[in-house]
Length: 255
Image 1 (cartoon, rainbow, N blue to C red):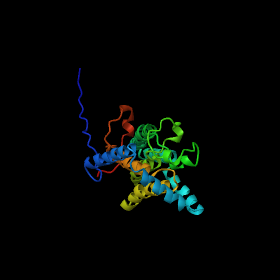
Image 2: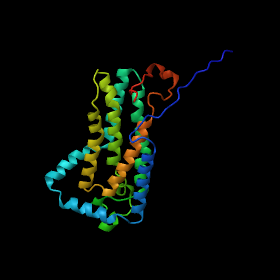
Image 3: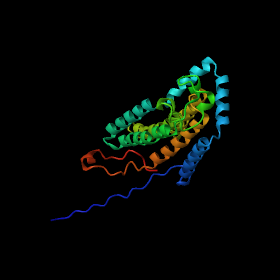
Image 4: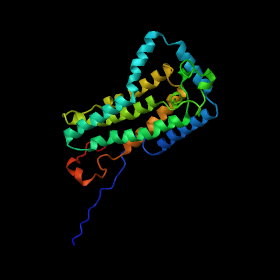
């Protein structure tokens, strides 16, 4: 019997900026530290002060403008948009690989953001003026598991975390999409796509009183951490089943 051997290409993580794992550790440490601070009843004064200021400076026009802009952070439309973009790139390149980033991003966000919200069980600032109509001081603490789940999912902000992850995915797929059209993506456009929408979502979420300041900061830290993990994945080199060899072309330019 003749034996055949193959050499599997060694997987190498893609570079991110700042490089190295120290920044990931810093993001994780900051998220843990922030959670511990809130769990021990710290930073409540800061949260309350920002929420009260926003409520006092929220005229109707500004509120409606913020609500419209906040739609930039809707997780489901962003997921579908990234998945659709991945499919379009996959068809144009005849490669299944562009579909992988949105799928992995969905699984990663599903397994992190939602469970953290349920575990920390924190009400939103609006919980004192809407159902369940809590006393203002009771809207601040974490771990209020006696409340129904739908009233205690404020920490961390899913809008902010999702915006960072999904606009990162859109930026990742935008270059190969335009590449199939013979066009290059200006680096500034990639930076705008990755930075501006998440910042808009962060600011409007706090301004509208839908999340505490620390909720949005936690969403920012978590989103950046997940984004870095996803951008490290060597999407071009991941092993695929033999049945997909005809759809195995790379789609990301080498760094």
